[in-house]
Amino acid sequence: MLELHDVHYRPATAQQLVLNGIQLKATTGQPVLIAGASGSGKTSILDVISGLAACRSGTIRWQEEALTQRQRRALCGLVFQFPERHFLGLTVPQELKLGH
Image (cartoon, rainbow, N blue to C red; front, side, top):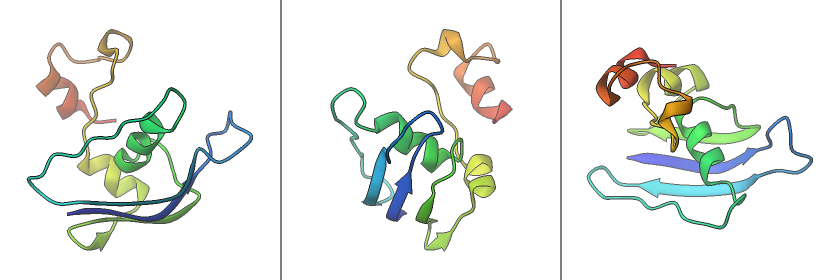
């Protein structure tokens, strides 16, 4: 199970928090949908979960264990919306194996 508790995040380019007190509980095997308007923080929450960005405060747990940004980066794989801008591998499996 993935849990986010009271997660706050502000990108360096933003004046205000993009994620403010986010709570999330995702059960293993159940789909999760993150939806919202442009600029609402959808990509930011994925960046924080995957360890590509550091949250200012809050806790992110996987299987009831709190994980650091470095641990999340090693554990997660992320395929970007526009892969032609980010791909280093030739296939999605290769890209995920490369890590961040």
